[in-house]
Image (cartoon, rainbow over all chains, first blue to last red; front, side, top):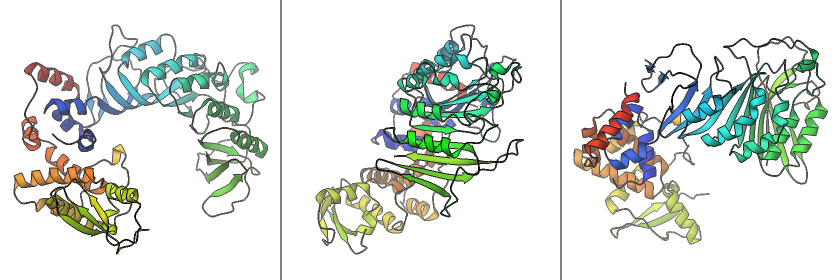
Length: 319
Length: 172
C-alpha cells in the first residue's frame, strides 16, 4: 500500500484486462488508480442491426471486437462511459459516421467524459464543408492528434476547405498539435463518381502537384507534426517539381519552432540530387538560421496508371 | 565516460557503508544525479559518500542484480503499450527472486526491492520486479489479491455493488 502511484501504474499496466477489473475491488486506492478504463482503440461503424451485446475475440480475450450496438442517432440520452481514456477513436472507413446533420452533437454526447488521444474522421465531398464543426468536437475530447481520411481526393477539391476560415488556427486553439491526411476509399454509401462538370474536377483544375500551401498553413498555425499518406494532398496527374519542393523548404525555413513532416511524394526524376550517401539521405539544406533534414526512401506502392515517376517516403525535420 | 575502476561509497538508511564500482551505479539515475550534483572530480576514488534511503540488506540485493546486469544497454528502453508484457523475465532474474526463501519473506523482500529500485531510479530492476508482482496477482480472485497485497477491504457493500455493475461490461 506504500508504493507511489507511478509504481502501482507500472504494475497495473502489465496486467490483462480481467485482472485489472478484479483489482478495482481490492481497495479504494486501487479503484482510484485503475480508473478510468483505458481503451487502445474504439471504432465506430454504422450498421443496420441494433443489438446490445459484446463480442469477444476468441484469440485475445482482452479484446472485444464488438463492444455495443446502439441506435444512431441516439433515441435517448446515452453516453458510452462515465469517464475513460481512449487511445484512438476511429470512425470506420466502412459505413462511416460522417460529419453531417447533427452527428457531431450526437458523437459529443456519446463520448462525454472521454479523453481521446487520436481521432480519425472521414470526409467525402458531401461533408467536407462541415469541417468547421471539427475543432470544437476535438476540443471536447481533448484530442491532440487528428487524422483526416479524405474520400476521392483525385476527383474533387477536398483541400480548399482546410485553408478557409483560419481552420488550422482553430485546430491549434482546440489543443491539436498533430495532423495526418490520408486518401481513402470509403464503403457504405453511394458516392458521386467523377464530377459531372469540369467546374468541380480537381484533376482538371490549375492546382499544384502537391498542396504544400496546406502544410505551411498548418505549420504556421502551430501544428508541430504532419503526416501525409498517398492520395491525400497530391494531384495524381502531376509530378512534383524541384522548384515547388525547394520553395516549400525555403518557406518552412521561415517558421519558428520545430516541425516534422512525413510525406509520401510523387516525384519527378529531377526532384532529388543523386544519392550522396548509403543511408538514404539525399539532401541537406543548411543556412544561417536552421537546418532542414530531408531523408527519403523509395516506397513500394501498387502500380498505378500514371506518368513515370516515383513515390518516395520523405521525412522533413526542421529544428 | 564511466571508468570501471572508479568507485562510489553509498551509505544506507541503517548506517552501513558499501563501496561499489561506477560501472554498477551508472544504472541508477538517483546515484548518478547525486554524483553530478556533488561536482566532484570524476577521478576521486572513492567518491564522497552518497546517502541512499535503502537498508543494507536490500541494497546488497540491488547490488547483486546490478552486478549481473552491469553490461545492460543504457538508457533502458521505454516500452510501448503493446510491449508491456510480464512473461519475459530472464531466467537469472527469476532465480534471483525465487531464492528469497519463504513465501512471506519473498513478498516482503520483493516489496523492499521494488521500493529501492524506484527510489534509486533503476529502471531495469523496477521493470523486472513490477512484472514479478504483476505475475503473482494475475488470475487471482479479489480475496487472493488482497492477501498478496496485504490489504483490507475498505469498501462498503454499496460501493462494491456499484463497481461490480461498472465492471459487468468488460467481464467475459
